[in-house]
Length: 423
Image 1 (cartoon, helix red, strand yellow):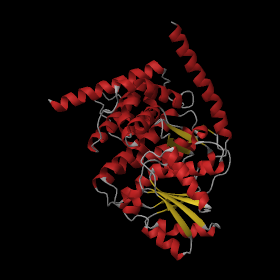
Image 2 (spheres, helix red, strand yellow; image 1 turned 120 degrees about the vertical axis):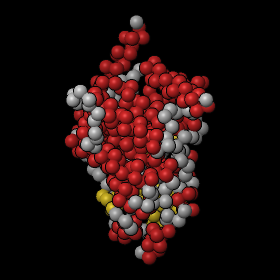
Image 3 (cartoon, one colour; image 1 turned 30 degrees about the horizontal axis):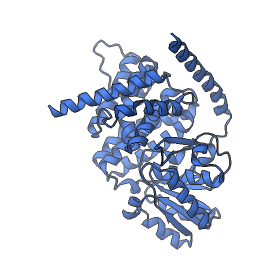
Image 4 (cartoon, helix red, strand yellow; image 1 turned 180 degrees about the vertical axis):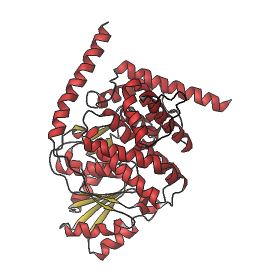
């Protein structure tokens, strides 16, 4: 009985907190990055940097991006415009506080005055982390994680996504992992929003199909979670979610099957941007809270975990998301199987859920997460609860026991799935 009372009080506290946060959200000065878009757009970036009075750029990128030659056109144009730069490419797929500190040392030591974040979400998150530490030199990353703890202007960031998933080019979030504990958490502050976003589909043409799939599903997760959360959203965020989901419905499978299709690639970049801008105010939910714990503990790609968990979490929310998922079904003009002629919200929501599950299968994404170890379950729940409650305005608030039951259900699903494959 005491546990039930504690759970009820916790859930009421979360809703009161979220009601107050909603008022704060409405008062904040939201903005979006200026955008350069289209094939070859990255070539226009050096001139934009120089015209704004910057002299030396820290290019934050990943080692694979540099090795693939994706930077070449940008670097040639920077030399042409006589714009100085230094490259920092020591970033892993889940950037750590130690990597951020290395970047801070280069930024300050080389006397840079702005950054170009050239890569996927991990690169942009690391650049934001560097900026936050430059702005707050006396605070460690762990002391900046949470809401509005930077509160000072950071060096200007020009974001160039080379994947179509994180939407980090349009968010106020930077997800950083503590190297020693593997705890993964987000810094959230308006100061982290990049000033420019360069959406050049040519930069994503060479992505492996698996990366295209995982990052595309990450964008879908952002849009679906933000749309079903609703509490913090304005009409603008709802519009951004709608555009993102529709574009993903139309183009993700095409981009996966034919990576050279520039229109599909452009659509997916725009979808990731719209979804990023939507969830930076609308927030994410338990897919991300649990997924961050899993990817931090096991070093699993962020987008893969999001893709696996998304339909399961939405199903677990039950009837509280029927109307919103039904909206998304309508937005995508999905065909609804209604033999009795009754097109209820539940039926349309089920149609949308089935589409996500079928899309996962077509993209080669496992149905269940097979990386969870029983001895880690309590730690996963602890981290997910700390991240999500009371901040995330999820459709259904889960206490620690309810979240644990969900994680255990995922483990059981993975066990059964593995048994079927071995038969």
